[in-house]
Length: 504
Image (cartoon, rainbow, N blue to C red; front, top):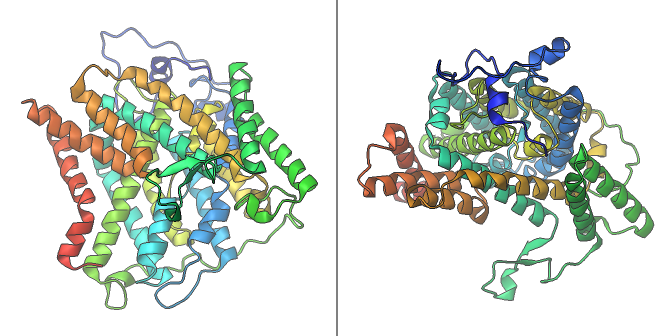
């Protein structure tokens, strides 16, 4: 991917709420290209060194990488609530597409950043595994609305942007690297290239190559071909390498499935075949079906338990999105030399509102997806790519069967490619300075090893503060970092705290 110098792209921005401005001693910023039309002027496409073609291609690539959420989210939310009621599968699919379309388009139009949002897997899993056994589904969706509104308050007050800008630059670079390793691991696992060793094997090794210690099955071969195709296209500097690679992998999968008629379970959620009827009418039955405060009453979890549940959702939604925006913004060249992004508050506001939008739609809270990085890797630099991604999600309201045509193994290859690209940020960290190298290492390592972005950020923040204090530099982290470290201590100690308070 050809990178445009970060300084040129950032200083070309004219957002009213930019977080930094050049000092009088700095040389004047390079002149921005004159906008070609109203669309170019609004999204600053030329000013960021992009083109409408790049943005469309990037938006399509992002959608193809995250289309699996239309299949996965209804499965995650298929469990029974406290009364034994199940959500309607078709209604959840519609809600998932609707909430993703609305939030992603808003991210593009309001935030003007190449970010796409959909139902957060951590939020959906928390709703299904932790909350549904104790509350009704309308009450669970009400908690999503509450946590989303709380994050909006944090954004409006300036607290969220203050936190993002207050994190040391080395930790920001480490967040980008950690996310790169994390999404690469997600891709390898989704492809079946790396699997967890089953408990029955009684092995000390937690993961292995393939399902039996060796690579097996046609889907893994498709993953490998797609991955190598994208890498080869990138080395040869072919524009749209990721999107072309996804198309190659999908076509090969369709041919292979038609020729061999492999069992549906071979591919996982997405079977590469033409659906009998690609058209499906959307069912908006879940829209607005929420009970805002029911979970806090006697017929729900109770005030204390519901409060802890909201705290967990806010913390995960806050720092997962923060880290993802930092990582993707840095990769897109939208951050300045201090790792700050112009117009950040608008993107954060929409991301926070995504929690409420998802709860209102019945799809669970929306959050920025790591897969947005695939569009950035294919050239996306502005919010216009997000509008394209959101428009495709809206299109899928009527064609949801088509989302199953791209197998997960093909989308997984794109994640691994992007993960490799994000590791380039390692050159910005002074690894000889242990005061920053250790927190950076913990941030990077714990994201993939714990399968949690929040855990990685928390480890980095706490270790940074402790190391600086132990070196006699306890003032250097600042009040904000000290406060964050205390919040993360509560996060890591949440289970014993709940046990001590008698909360289940």
